[in-house]
Image (cartoon, rainbow, N blue to C red; front, side):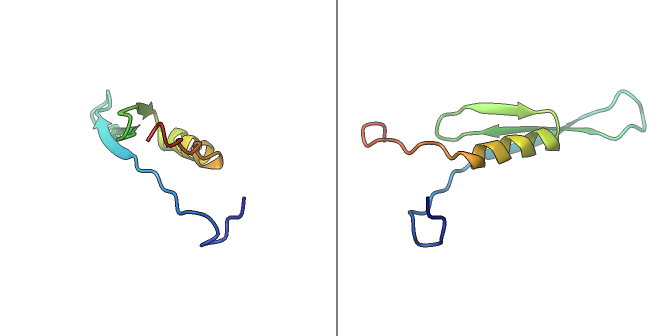
Length: 74
């Protein structure tokens, strides 16, 4: 596949990123960040325990882009 700009249709995908903290068990412990991504088109949501897990998911997801939907699915 030709990846030069202008040689293929521009494709993009949106995710809704949600971040929140969960308090640590100890008074001075740093907060634990939790992360989720939601596909706004399908409402599918996936949770991640840390930034590394989110990074691995995005690296894998972008390595093999989802197949384009056929006209019947649009």
